[in-house]
Amino acid sequence: MLIDTHTHLDDTRYDDDREATIERGRQAGIGACVTIGCDLATSRSAVALADRHPDIYASIGVHPHEVKHIADGWYDEFRRLARHAKVVAYGEIGLDYHYNHSAPKEQRERFREQIQLARELRLPVIVHTREAQEDTINILREEKASEVGGVFHCFSGDAWLAKDALDLGFYLSFSGILTFNNAAMLREIAKHTPMDRVLIETDCPYLTPVPHRGKRNEPAFVAHVAKQLAEIHPELSLEHISTTTTENAKRLFRKLR
Image (cartoon, rainbow, N blue to C red; front, top):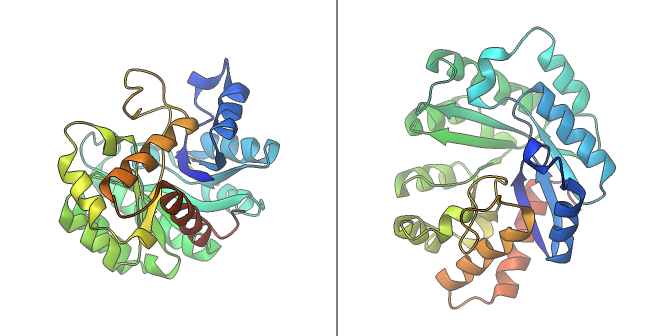
């Protein structure tokens, strides 16, 4: 069994075949998926999807691109959504200085607020960071995010970010990027990441792995990430990697079964 720890199954690109996509994942050995909230509407959609499927779980939160839209009452609604038995994490939250769809100062303020809310709710955090390594690590430290733990999703940073994240007690989640031809440095980081701190994900519908580049991504394709990890670790079997990453996901996302 594999667990796809980061999906966006509520995305409109699945509107014509969402149920078939989920079923293909099951047939490929995907035992569970976590579908991710990026704002209030997608958080509600993620929870609704989890409510309909026994093998889908949800996270809630506001992506750094969207924090400029946070309005009165949003955090109270997240508190309500968090009571659902299948909400396993708070995120994805963090900082993204590449696009700056929300102003950096507001990103930092909202990141702090959301870590504080995650700690109140006792939910691990799912972290998105891009071109914001120092601020991300500093805020996680200052807001004591290690008390609830979390994961750097779709990890594509450098060795220093990997070390900082691991020192905080966080997991690193590897996506289809690991299979890309130009990802030699990332594969080297994955090789030196302790296996008990590794998760796998698709981030579907984005970042489709080789050999499906150019197609819409989906949970079934997370198997290619696991296979790439097995190639990086020739001393480990694919079965061992599947079992270990599944156990890691269940350890972090405690409600996940």
